[in-house]
Each structure stands twice: as structure tokens, then as C-alpha cells.
Image (cartoon, rainbow, N blue to C red):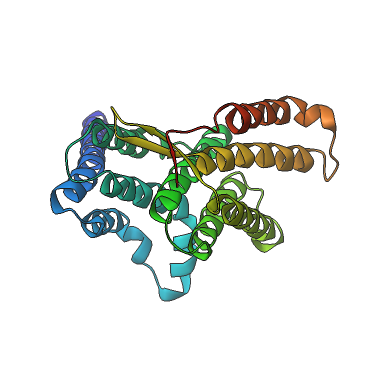
Length: 262
């Protein structure tokens, strides 16, 4: 009897895992293509929010905490929907790329809980969120991208701090990170370079690359300080900072003549 119970339980778990994976695939593909078919980002946003129904199934007292805890996932989902929307209603390779990215996010990246995967999740949110923000706000007042980048920076930093059990001072490091992102957004918005790959329909704003690299370097510096109990040694951050600065130099100096500027 015990062996039968274990077998049934394992079978149910296997079926549950398969169904969960299928639902994630349907969400990843459905949210992108529903946006294309409807010609509206609203349908995609609704599907993303419906997938997060557990976030709202709590007492009001815990709702804000739940939103902050799910901010990275929301940023990625909303950003992919917006990128699909701004790519137009004509089916392009970029729409397939966005669908694959969202499916991989939901099935491979998001379920991971190790420190390195938490960093990858945060950097993914920074890159995709910044791409969507700068494309959406290219012709709008600079205050809007600054506000949205504050949310992206805060959400990404809080995700790493909370998931890696380093949340201290009531999240003030995350707030500082958000303010830093907002300032960069204000500076970048006045002269924004965009890289366009017309054959694929892919558009990548340069600030998204810069902010992702900055996010990587700042997280490495903060991690080094945390490990040394408040002391910073240059040798602990020499490799990631040197790598980040080298990539920034290549992007800013070598690739600042795009197909077009916004």
C-alpha cells in the first residue's frame, strides 16, 4: 500500500509539473501573439496579471509586499508584451524571439533560486525593462523614463538583496540603486542611441545595455563589501569592474554611430 501511495504521489507530481510547464508555455506564446493579433498591449498585460493571481490572493496588508516581491517577474512580462506591441502587428522574427525569451524565462530562468540565477533574473529585468522603457518613452517627457527606471532599478536591486538574504536597512540600498537608474535615464533620454536590426525587427536602445552593465558592476561591488563586512578591497572587484568598464568603453566609443538616433 505504501509503495502504491508513493507511486501515485509521484505520478501526480509529474503530471502537475507537466501541466505547469504547458501553462507557462501557453502564457509565454499567448501573451505575445495576443498582443500582435489585438494590436493592443492591454490584452498581454491582462494575461501577465492573470498568471500572477496568487499575488493578489492575500489580505490587503500583504498586497504591497507581494507586489514588490514579484516586481522582477512583472517587469519582464510587461516589457516583453510592450516590445511585441511596439514591433508592430505584422508578424516578424522578433515576435518569435520574444515568445521564446518569455517561455525560457517562465520555464528555465524564473524557477531558479541560487545566487547566480537571482543575479541573472535581475539583470534580465534591467535589460528588457530598459529596452521597453526607452522605446516607449522616446518622444515623451524625460520624467517618465526616469520614474520607470527607478522602479526597474529598485525592483532588480531588491530582488537580489531579498533573494540572497542580504536585505538590510529596510531596503535603502535598493532605493539608492533606483535613484541611480533614474538619474542615468534622465541623462540618456536627451540623446538616445538606438541599434536596429531591420531583418529581425529587433531594436535595442544603447541605455539598456549601459544600465545592465552598470547594474552588474554595482551588484559585484556591493557583494564584495557585504562579504568583507563593510570593507572594500579592489582585488575583489578588479575583474568584474574592469570587464564592465571595458564593455562600456566599447559600446560608448565604438558603437555610438547607430542606424538612427531618437
